[in-house]
Image 1 (cartoon, rainbow, N blue to C red):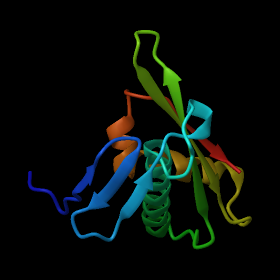
Image 2 (tube, helix red, strand yellow):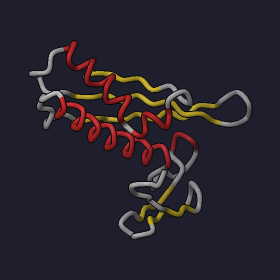
Image 3 (cartoon, rainbow, N blue to C red):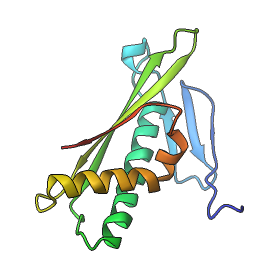
Length: 137
């Protein structure tokens, strides 16, 4: 299957730069202070949180539009945790905090989040690999 779109970026490590092939993304990378770094740049976990949040919010709009539900005021906040995996490496966890408009009741909101989790490419890529918690705020 051919890709609808392919993003390309190059990075030099956690203390360096990440640049997309079209130069629209050009960020300084730095270890977070919590991990002993300077914290003077972004880090892969922040980039993953931003990408997953944006993707999930877009997928939510698609799912909701098919159900004729207005979620124009929705927002998604991603939290990406970095954990030791017990084998000398690391693993990730994700919590997606979704703020839905007040007119969306709890049952409908839960159905929207679960349906969106089946559509979002980030959710499909992470399913079975890392824990992802969906929370309605």
